[in-house]
Length: 243
Image (cartoon, rainbow, N blue to C red; front, side, top):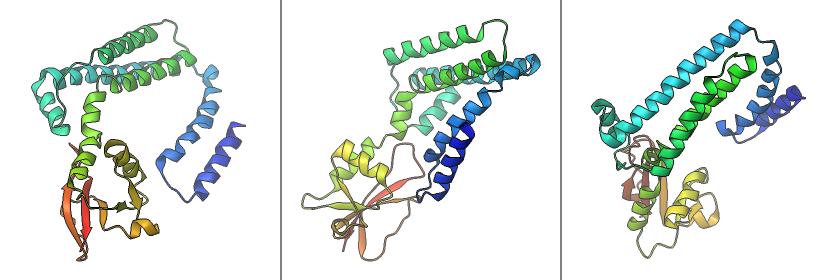
């Protein structure tokens, strides 16, 4: 049944006109079920190796995330704090107590999970799951404000909103920018129309995303605003006005 489910999903993804990595995530479900059926036959030596490698990997990652959280908020270790500020210059050091308590709880839970005795195949895999949960939990608690300051589109959307002239009737962008279209409306109330539709094609203003800061539009368009997310050097946004 799992193999059939995997085959059907793979065929659907192959024939789908939309190609994104996120759509391949459901393939993990049948693969996990197929792998889980063999856990009972895993030998003790293999289970011990798998468990030891997971303890080392996730233990080091968890320790690094705690040290990194201290660096971004207290400035020590200095070198790590400098790299933290370099990748997220908009982040303001502060302690979010609910997130800190959840991070401590996740760490203590992981310690309890990995200190059980008589490790078997299923328990070794459970420890791996606990380690992955620990890293994900610390990322979504201790590091979440840092990630938000680096990845959020809020400041970019608000900056573009301030640059749009008051007499602008509409702003258009490519329909493939569905993430930006949703977030620009969420953060700044800007409704970006798809350029492929008639209403969007008639707009005198257009938002363009490019991977270089020296982007130059066609002669019929003029750049009136340029911006990017804090810490991002791969996505640059331009507001164009039709000449």
